[in-house]
Image (cartoon, rainbow, N blue to C red):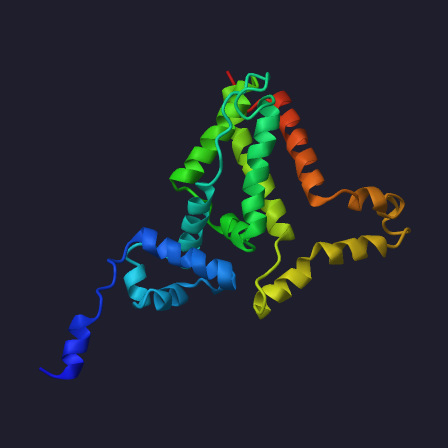
Length: 240
């Protein structure tokens, strides 16, 4: 028996590959290097295995990123009925709905790129289902017709995800993501609005401050209230 053979046998065995282990490794890479670097090849390298081994558990990088987001959604706290009297998390159903969706937005803002990934492949894991259930329950608690509430969940989730995707910044050192961000950066849009020709865009020129006013969090909170008001007042087709 050679020394090299003995060293291989004495080496500690690697943990068995699993979906949970893959997701944990992806989150570590995402936190250290950015989501754009968390490719199947990079994750396989971190796990000391080949990319083909990962495809047994996840079908694509997009599915992997969706699984990562679902894992992070597990940190969201439920918003039980506070009765409007200080019980539970406090506040009425709409305040709790805004808190819940605000926490969802905070996850997307904390991990740049996740929101864009969520727009490509909508999360459908157990934690995402739990989030959808909570949003639906809060809308129904607000006496919104169940059919309207069901459609409203999609609208509210898309609104928050799209806003986070718009304001997400790319990972440092990612040239492609940087180009994308430069092309759609809110700062560029603001400059374009400020420079708009009053003859061609008289309304924008006259109301630029209003168009660009408010912090992202304020605009999201207002948007959620506006959407809820619209969901409450707008019937869905064939509503019984």
